[in-house]
Length: 390
Image 1 (tube, rainbow, N blue to C red):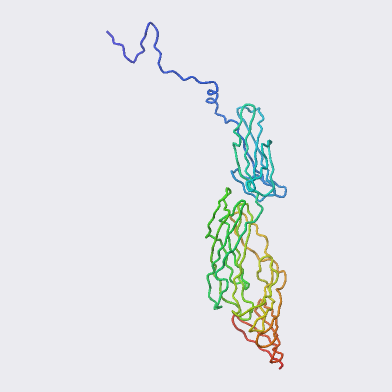
Image 2: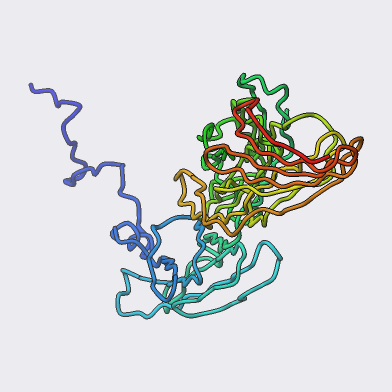
């Protein structure tokens, strides 16, 4: 007698017993989804920046910052499961800086922007058998042609005294601001211009703190501080003193650059000075080859030295590139002046400081008659000779 294995199929009334496990029913639409591996309707945006009529396609991004003259947004919609369809692209565009609606319910394959601002572009597409959700995609575009504002707020100390030749640490603090693409915190630089052309440190400003971050990787405000070592020394014949011009510069995420400057002085003395002879400043008073000037001084019959005005070229700042302010052409000599001596009557004079440190002067003494003379000055003193008539 043979026993039937419990795993073998049993027959009941001549028929085979089927497994109780059944394949699930597939709805027609669900079956279509399961069988399709092709993406459905989708839309892409391409941003092209135009400068002087030449367009450059920007790399794909969720946020674009540019200083271009104009920007064109191109839309491309595809529906792989219905390749013969012609999708329609819709878009809404808002200027987030003002809240103004630039386009509402617009349609088409492209749209152009040229005014400065930060724009939110929302877009989606529809066709005969599919549609993307409204505002399915969104990008930000900053059109920023304005330089960031750089403000040097303090310089300590701004007078180096006594003129003993020692180097002094000067601390500079300030802030850089940009309300469109934002300040590039890694772009801050400093540069020093010495009226003697001797001590001119420069470098990156790394002690920075950013606040109000933007979608473009910058900051609405960046505070900064740095130190420079400047020499407390000046020529003895240099009655106007030695000037250090400290320049701080910053760029924004669109590539614009701004700067500010402050002046640190090594004076000839700490007496009273009532007049300065300065040349034109355009925009930073840097050094020239010759100095002319005059002014009123209570104790001496010498005017204050002026400095020649120079131009500084506009600095273009590609992101992460250093800023190096450069001397421009001399516009002309500094101002001239004369003054009254306090105790010894009326005196007036003027002098030219050349590259070799030669000074000249003449004056009239109130009580002692007329005197005039000239001499060559060194760092702190010099030899002079002269004669006068009583």
